[in-house]
Image 1 (tube, rainbow, N blue to C red):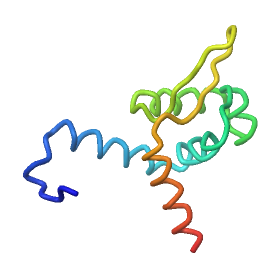
Image 2 (image 1 turned 45 degrees about the vertical axis):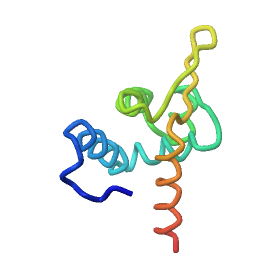
Image 3 (image 1 turned 135 degrees about the vertical axis):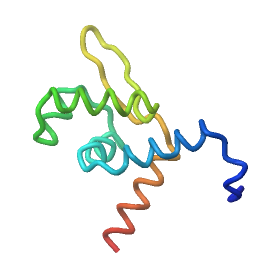
Image 4 (image 1 turned 120 degrees about the vertical axis):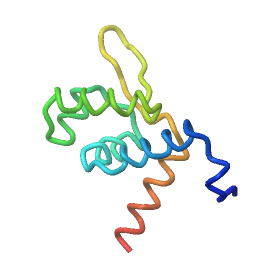
Length: 100
């Protein structure tokens, strides 16, 4: 693993910091945790987590821009799932750490 910060380019630093920013929000953590095992529509996520649809849509847009979630279209409905196994492993490890 390259731990020399002099070798980190600006783009890499930005992506890493944005990913940690994404994981620093409780609502986004809840959404990613929900999407760990199954895909859900926006309404399904909102219902499962007792959130407003607009809140879920806003957070999914943020997560999609970071390529942490992806979607597939079925008719007029979009179904979201996680899109980065590495980040999901980090998230699960942090949850396990917090519960330890």
